[in-house]
Amino acid sequence: MAERFGGRFSPDPPEGEPRIEATAPVNPFEGKVPARAGFRVNLLFLTPFPLLIRAFTMGATGLVQTLAGFGLLLLSAWLTRDGEIAHQAWDARKVARRPAIPRKIFGSVTMAAGIFLACLPDTGSLVGPVLLGLLAGALHLAAFGPDPLTDKGMEGIDGYQQDRAARAVDQAEARLAEMKDAILRANDRRLEARVEKFQTTARTMFRTVEEDPRDLVAAKKYLTVYLTGARDATVKFADLYARGRDAKARADYEALLDDLEKGFSQQTQSLLTDNRDDLDVEISVLRERLEREGIRAE
Amino acid sequence: MQARESAGKRGRMTAGGMRNLAYGLLVAVILYVAFTGGA
Image (cartoon, rainbow over all chains, first blue to last red; front, side):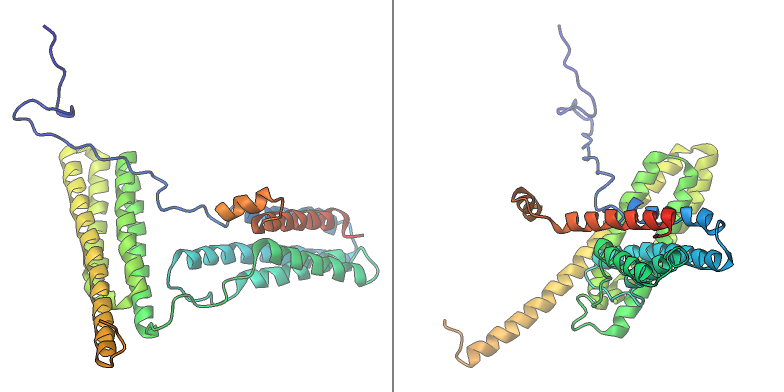
């Protein structure tokens, strides 16, 4: 007689065996956006290089002017890259200050100046270099856009509290990065993916704290004590696991990450509920007042 | 996404298309200056 196939992972496991739920695999690209400072910006570093060769076919003045232009073009590419990174960071946050230095706009200006200087030796007049410089500057501005010039979502936010929250989040991010570095030593792709998943959960809390810096008090323990502990545990585990591939240690470590992740998401949820309570109080106070003044129809 | 598609369908230039065009022209201008010196 045919025997029914069944095991721990089958829909109907035999009596007395625990059923193991499969978890849906998390897309490794979840929550990630393509880097803005990619090939387009990096190409700007390469295009001016023919100038280096041209420079040494000229007289002394031409050499100096062309080299200065070359330097300015590289400076422009560098400013543009940093500006794009800052712009992306600004886009990613719901509450953000504008960048201290408008790097992309400076990039446009240095681009114009660089093209002007590079053209200067070969054309007798100033008209050509000026026109080409202005054209390049305008094209740069159109291609990469100006930097974000306004603060975003900063109304009603205490600047001091905001700075404290931003600092705490920066330190927490540094701990996450150390954790990631450490787990690379374990040389196990699945563990790396596991740590990445934990980082995504932790970052959800970071964003919540950034949006409402009053949450920092409640989240402080998670951002400092627990993350530091997680990093230290990861460092020790990675060294141990790289040497012996200890399955027990691995299971323990994964259980720790599970617990931490649960703690982080629960805390994030409760932070959001706090905000909800604030909103409820605000609404009920205003509605009571409207009622008292006879504006609200029953 | 919707807006981008419909703008493209109507044959109009999208903001992304403008940026790409500007970028292409910028690279062309830099290369032109780098190879000819703008003369």
